[in-house]
Image (cartoon, rainbow, N blue to C red):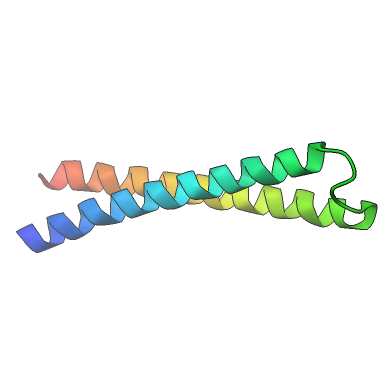
Length: 77
């Protein structure tokens, strides 16, 4: 594998891990917002829980993709 592709894969792993961490942080803030009283109207709580679940699933996807890319990178080196 050439150097440019190796550098691109390393940058991709870093970016995917950052995306996963940012989504997990956002998920945490939304969860705190759900727990605090009187911040969200009752009709919006279901939407917030769904959004929280969606963000968590996206974070898991990005993390798994980063691990697979990192594994591929280690096999190529």
